[in-house]
Amino acid sequence: MNDADTRIAAQIRSVLTAAADNGGVAPIVEAGDPILRSPTRPFDGQVDDGELATLAEVMRATMLAAPGVGLAGPQLGIGLSMFVAEDPGSLDPEVAKVRQRHPMPLRVVLNAEYERAGSEDVAFFEGCLSIPGYQAVVARPREIDLRGLDLDGNPLAELVTGWSARIVAHETDHLSGILFLDKAEMRSLATNTSVARFWNQPSTQQAAAELGFSLPSAMVM
Image (cartoon, rainbow, N blue to C red):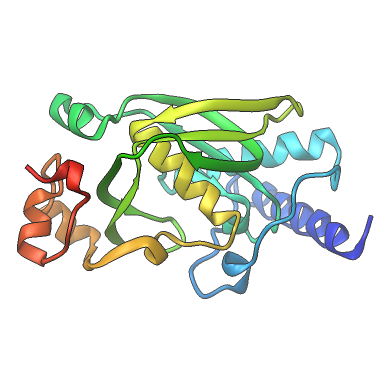
């Protein structure tokens, strides 16, 4: 292995050790750490299958404990192109309909890339485990084409839609050193408390009107 891959292997083993000492949950890296701004390297056998599977388990456990619906390698201090995502969906029927937020089973994706699959964008509040306490409105494609590998090395190529597409795009952006605030409407930036108090409507139209930011044309009534 070259120096970069050796470093990634060491990062993985360090995370696995930390998780083993903490009930299977690893520390989450927060904004300001340069690894969150560094492009990742593709998985290419830096660790063996057993260590990779254990890493996936640790990432999922850490994500659920946070709690969150997605987690990428850099968020654990690992410069590897890998993310996990899982979403129970929304229990509120109106929210589920407006945001297209339906259950998404666990995904573990290596070497992920995505492209928009249609012309329509939708904008909703989102947050990030590496920027705790804050949310902002981000416009993202309603549909994306996801490509990558599963944990066994099998190729993935699928259309992802709705809220699941938002999660997958958010996590895949992490693999290129992109944080959600880079794409956010900054006038919408709010604490989690403020979002719960003022902006818990299914859509973002009221927030756009009162905070003074624009929405994609498809969302303007």
